[in-house]
Image (tube, one colour):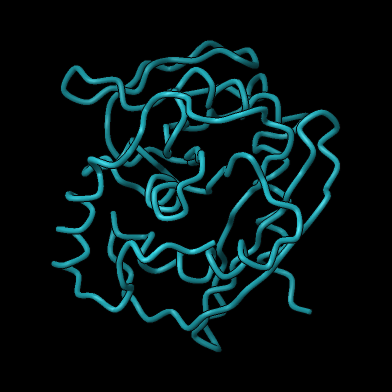
Length: 220
């Protein structure tokens, strides 16, 4: 499942240069088949042990029933640097994805994709690395400007930077703070928003993200 796209043992300067180069590989149009299963990917940290704990939860799109889960841990070798989260979290996330027995059609990542200073956030990095459709679902803004969307579920406003639309500010539940949705890879923004709403029920976060977050914090 993994790709020899690049190595993970690199410096901060090399990571920034790599993001700039790989951003050209992001596909912003739909290249995906039927979306029957969606996976949520989240990474937590065990600071005492110095490891990143990645969790993946796969749900059936029609019912949101969980059909597969996987967890993997790796030492946190890359430092915390804003904008370079993927180099710290993706090695463990990819390990977890490789342990799945039910492959997803789309990945929902806890973080940004195209809505990133170099247009290559964690969702784009994971999507390009594995050549799979991916979506960034973030709880806070990294870059860009936007009006406040309307108060009802499904209301949205474009997230822009220097006149370019880089994502959507989406209200997933009436009266609660919106989420920041952006293209990861092999998907357009309209499709990304539709899938996120389809995976969201009575909570602010999609069920994929909520369940992966909980699993990433659960020690077995």
